[in-house]
Image (cartoon, rainbow, N blue to C red):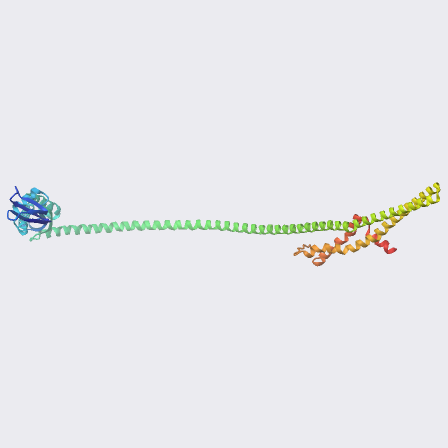
Length: 427
């Protein structure tokens, strides 16, 4: 006993003991009892058949020969067809099965040829192949054989009938070809002339359009050139105007800088004058007032001394009236002397000491005035072209301030330095 297997291209048929009827196994395996069961195989391969039908008379009595190609196979998927095939072909070789199918197909091919004309077979091969396929399939299916395909391969005759048909058709085709060629040449000429006419029209229209485009281009170019030139001229004028405005603004800024510098210089001078006034007040006026106070105290002390001496003299004389008169006289004389000394002190101090103090202070004042200028890192001078420039300009500025000092001293102390100097020179 053992297992038997087969591929998908064949079928196993098992019969014998324990089986009511044969078992068909298309592609698979089965257990077979040796001796009491029988295993047979039937091929399911596709068979290619060449069907030759020579000198078969067609419907109109014209003998032709036809060669067809068919593919057939035993149908393994249909159990009824497989059973029929096994009944007919089991135990036979593949060649024997092929011979049976070929004889059947050849008979049907001859029958179809007898019912059609040569022209039908020749011109409509598809119709002929379909007819053979349908008729042969209806018979072979009863044998369990399935017709996969049928194709008419060749048709020929020995009398030259097909050649004549071809010659006639060829002549007709040639005639039609010549007519068609003549018509084509005629149509081509007409179309060529029409095309040439259209081409010339198109060319003339194109030339016109080119001329119009050229004219429009020249007109637009002239307009653009004029616009460009106008814009350029406006830009140049705007540039010149802007340059002039810029220069004017620069000049204004320079003048503004000059004004600011002068204003700052004036402020510096004013501050310096205030400082000098305060310095003069501290160095001249305050000492003068102190000296004045000292002289007044000396005069008062002298007055007191004189009064006391007068009173002492009055007491010594012991004459009240005379003492009083003497005291009054002494007092008056002391007061007059005090006033004279005070006037002389003031006169001498103001005319001499104060002048000397002022003259000693003037160099210091000049040095202090020049000090800010010497400390300046950069001095910008603006000149209109008139007057001094450079170092002489700075010197003149310092001297101009110095020239104003006598009037400042006179305003502070009431002393006219120039006048007092002249009076001292006369003395």
